[in-house]
Amino acid sequence: MVNVIRSEIFKSLRSTYFRICLVGGSLFIAIAVLFIPQIANVAGFSIETRSDLSKIMPFVFTGACVALMIFFPIFTDIFKYNTLKNEPGSISLITTGKYLTALIFCLIFAAVFMASFTVTFFRLAPSPDTDKGLLAESLISFLATIPNYAAMIALIQLITIAAKNEIIAAIIYYYSFAQLFTVKLIMAGAMPEDMVILRHLTPIGEFYNLGDLRFSAVHITLSVVVGIVYAIVLHTMSRKYFMKRVMA
Amino acid sequence: MEGVITAKGLCKSYKNVSVLKDVSINVKEGEIYGLVGKNGAGKTTIMKILLGLVPRTSGEISLLGASSESELRVRRSEIGSMIETPSFYPYMSARDNLNYYRIQRGIKDKGCIDKALRLVGLDDTGPKKFRDFSLGMKQRLGLALATLHSPKLLILDEPINGLDPEGIIEVRDLIRELNQKSGTTVLISSHILGELSQLAGKFGFIDKGRMIKEADIEEIESAGAEETVITVDSVAAASRVAASEFPEAIFTTDKDSIHFKSGYSDGIISAFSREGIAIKGLSSGRETLEGYYMKLLGVKQNG
Image 1 (cartoon, each protein chain N blue to C red):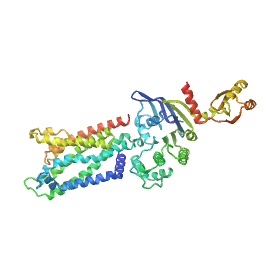
Image 2: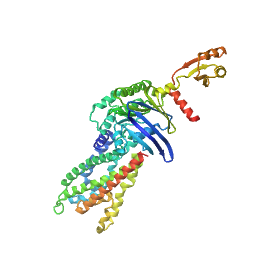
Image 3: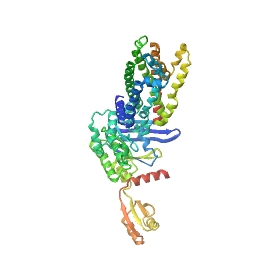
Image 4: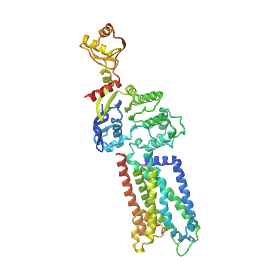
């Protein structure tokens, strides 16, 4: 498995398209997070103190789902270039190997995000009454999104196996699953606080919840569990579906 | 000698269409085994099943001594293969493509890439991307990948497709060298039967998903050893003379020749000359793979 992941990283970094997406995506995240106050201002939010960050983070977390689309080529290249026949010894490992590769690249985005967030946090004015421990809680919230991003990557992999083509897969993903967060935000706004548990149903929902940045430990744990369960179920489905499709 | 590839009763169906029917094949260690058959006969499907790229509907397989699914998975990683037209990542060079598979297969020796590229004559392609390769170069890279890890078994599906005459000779020599120097066992298919007959020592003839015959080169060559072919200006007259004056002779005719399967004697030539039948050519000798195949298929079709 380690060899498959190493080879996938090697191959991805040889692709000009992927390198541009990776560097471009990282720059985009860095710029977007470093200039959150200014961007939020354009969108009609006022971010003046550190505790105001929670107003915008649900949008940042959910919006990042679109950036995950750069992983489509990792999953579709074997179909696009018909290279699976070169890998008779690795077929059973390919699906998980590619999934873990995408996850590793995702962690690069995560690192860029956390670094940029920390810089932005300290650039904002402190609000002594409310921002005690906020940075640590924010970073914990952010770490809790990773299993949910892992679930979204598993979903992307499942879609690519079904579509066998990154353009079709991207269209399906963007116009269906990536739009779910809009629905979720509308629903969440209308949902009473005592029914907050109902928000814990999908990874998309968890992005909204975790964007609160001061979510309780119980809810953070629940978010992580939801992400892990979705990631495992979706990836298992991808593996089974992949074997069924290529071994037909 | 233990079979490097042993398959018994292989069957493959796609939905309700049966593409392989009870195929058995036995390739011994150090052998070059040629699979012969028309397009769609089932040659590639056999190879894909052996490599685990397609599941079999039924039947048993043993590869390099392994027969359980878990053992087969391990053994398959030790096989070198090239199925149909080689496919690689177009945005990478020959070296990068091979390096990708070297890492994936856990081969520590980086020198194997240079060795494989040198072996197929692609060591001077530099940064040229796979997408800019000619068909012949792609074919060579496919062979380089197949030999990257010095496999004990090579499975090659139409490896000389698209190669120029010089390339065909080089690939033939390469396969022969791997077989003779390293003892690599080779299962190979090709439409170019003349080439295949120069390489393989044993052949499996596939037709409509069935293995209709397995024969070694000696058997094939001796099958037509007694045949004498006389090309004449009038096949009808020659046939009449042969039938009346040499009743013990067994022969068949085609458009311009009379083929004596047995009972040929020099007297036949004299008789033809005496009857004014012009003799345009005379040949006798070994059966060719092509001739054997055509007859085998003809017998099968008539039978």
